[in-house]
Amino acid sequence: MVTGKTRIIVFCLLGLFAAALFIYGVGFHSTNVLAQKDDSAAFTKSEPALIKEVSIGGVTRDAAGNLIQTYTGKPPQACPT
Amino acid sequence: MVAMVKETKLANLAARLLPWRTWVQTGFLLVWLDPLGLRLHNMCGPVFHCYACPLATFACPIGVIAQFTAIHIFPFIAVGLLVAVGALFGSLLCGWACPFGLLQDLAAKIPTPKFSLPKWTGHFRYVVLIATVLAVPYFFGEGHRLFICRVCPAGALEKAVPDMVQQALAGQQIIWPNALKLTILVLFLAVIFFARRPWCRILCPLGGIFSLFNRISAFFIRFELGKCTKCELCHKLCKYDIEPEKSPNDLRCIRCLECTRCGPGALNFGSIFERAAKAMQN
Image (tube, each protein chain N blue to C red):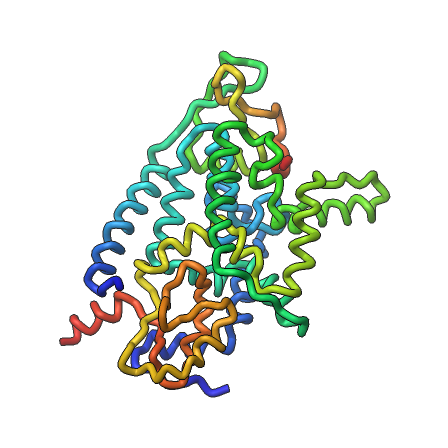
């Protein structure tokens, strides 16, 4: 049985952990993505932008391990899966 | 129905809201179904709702975790959000806010015979989580047929079916989802009338994650042994075959809070914040 005090401590620790992950993800985490068919044109995407990209199936990893955009021009409306 | 008077403000609020739970869930649809057309798909929502759906305010956290795993990037925002919501509420959002849960609750209102689900079936949620959200995406990418979004009934129901209807109405060729996704959807639609929340209890990876926090979350169900008369009314009130007096914050609990209606008041909705508030008063 979890006591009240333990629950408070665990909640504080988890809260801090979640806040650290969230703040890092929103503010600092970014990834380089290569434009399709043009390996020289790489651009940096923040994690929120990457979430939007994956939600439409807009980014994939190619055989060489590079992160590439799956479309050119107008982005697809929805994820193909 | 008159709500029972409880000892704490929070327990009282929960008792007052309990008869209106379906309406609370319906109210949350205004948040998830994007009535303002915001399409905030650069942020995850804390519920199971497909981002491919034309009516989705936020991105599905499970879809985002799976997609990020497929491209070998750690999803800091999605994991941070799930840890925060889990640490705060446990699986409370499953019972009170999830649109996919609401759909199953509404189907369960139809008076058909309801079958119990064996306890052990709840562990399948972790099989789904590890296999289709983490392992398959990591090793085989999003193109694999067992990638979560390729088998998810929420995606089938919220995106594939509306698309098919639209294509049929427009006289275009209908694009069918893959056979496995369609089979899971048909099975899901059949079973929700004969078992309560089958997806949430057997297969939902998001519910599986949230329920891991049930025993330690800031909001929880408190059992007071001194008040328990062993009447076992809570067993009847719980529709998910849990024995709340033995395990009030069980892994299988969706926190519908029905068990807190027990006569002697041995089960109450509580939080760590009440304790802090009491300490501040004293």
